Length: 478
Image (cartoon, rainbow, N blue to C red):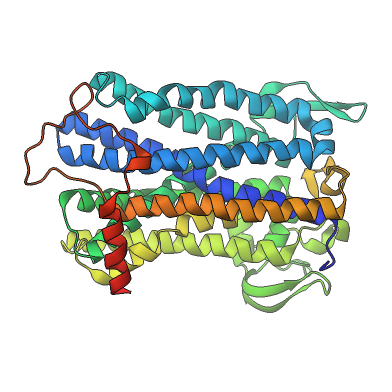
């Protein structure tokens, strides 16, 4: 069907499940650190706005964390069910790395998550803040181990092959492989940027509907400061990551650039747009800027970038896909930088919270960070093909011996269940976002901080009738 084989369906299934999964850890990483900052600011300043925002976003964090755990478990099982030959070949490396993630990060998160979510009126302030910080650190440690495993598959070292299996010889070399530092910084920063635009979009939604209070303004202000500072840093990290990829995976860079061949000693141009044709081995309708490809990728005006025709056809990534996925990621990155700069200009004019054109931009930029992460992930993983462990094991040799019918049935089941289950979860999470933070303005309250009386933060009881009222008002406006 459609010229697909069982291997293609296995790849599609893994891509589908990981595309769902990666969205949740990205928001979890960013929100965990955001919550730690909010509680720290509340403890330092005594400003109840930070406390109210903490309770609001902790509910969303809890729902997102739960969906991330479930989707991650399903994805992990696929290594044994659909990619058993890969597990047999490289399991001695990837298995321990994922085990370290569970023993360090997951146990740390699980150990303090209950205190963080339900201990607000049961433990002291310092212990509760410590729990929040530990959960935030746990998410970053989890990122460390997951990226160590994935980076080793991209730039493997610290091993030897005995009887057709990878045997670790140097764990420090395995963990701190050549691409690991760049991938770790790139992914962690991407999570912070994605969360910033998610939070900023939520604030913009409320401001556009006339809900203007200190909590909403603080959400937008903090989100835009993060965008202004971190988005340009992400661009710099991306440049270093590209140089590292050029050194270790030149075929991937050639595919990303849609660059097929070099001519004499001419510098490599940058192809802004075009359509790489894998059969005709050329990029059609190319819009080029002379010398710029060499300048960006080699930081010189005379060095050439490796071309796709320098590699055997069977070793070339699909340039058509990664050419455009990379440009989607970069385009959104520039739009994020623009949004941050615009917010600074409006902040100086004291119109950040009232400029409707900007608020609409901030609203529509809400999913931009997550889309950029998916586009970057496609670029990284499809650009590695046809290798599952770069230079060592091809993807075609890594899959389990399943039939086309078996893979078709499981893929259909995954699609149906994922859209039903996680669609409902995402819908509920967005309902929480539309509800907005509760504030204590204009009314007496005995709500306090940790160790004092306050309604526990119960994520699954948060979207009450007020949330439904928001939905009805939005429907009327539309």
